[in-house]
Image 1 (tube, rainbow, N blue to C red):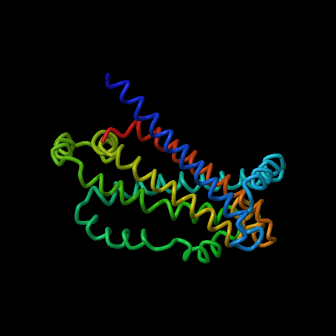
Image 2: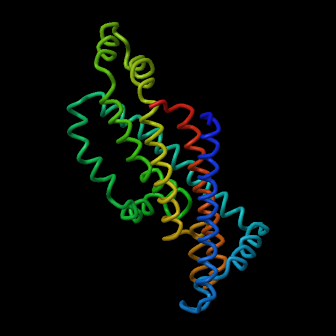
Length: 256
């Protein structure tokens, strides 16, 4: 059998398994919703959730919350990417500096960023700016660490050639380092985007008056469970969209 035919067969099997998994999950959800094992309303039927989702999509106020969340994620991610790349290159281009900074960056990267939320809110208030800041803080560390690690692995011969030709710092960055850092930066961005989304949504859930996170917790507080699940589905679909976008970028530019 030709390789293309085998490849198509493999893709078909994967898609079939994915569809089967989804159907099994929905069937299990429906069984649990009608089983009476949980408190009434905790697990609504899929039909009620779909209706709630349809109502949200047709609600003008929903798009205001969606727009604010997307703005917070976008600004936070842009700041995290710029700061992470600059910091990663600056630290990674000096081996001793990287060794000194690595324990601090690694420790802060693993710390839950929600602990910084009170400080961020003192600095920026409870508006969207604080959610952008906590999102940027969350996304900064994986991008900086990945960029720093990539900078440390740039071939020394290339660096020596650049120095031998007396390249300026800007020329060293654009002609020596950046061509070798495309893969590490993209991989860091992929991780950074995920934690940026988490940081923004946690900020909205904790203290906000607008955004998808606020909307979800508001529905929860009022025991509007179908509406809460509808918002969670929207967030899940956004996460899939972001992941697909980063996958497309990675497949196009990351050759490692």
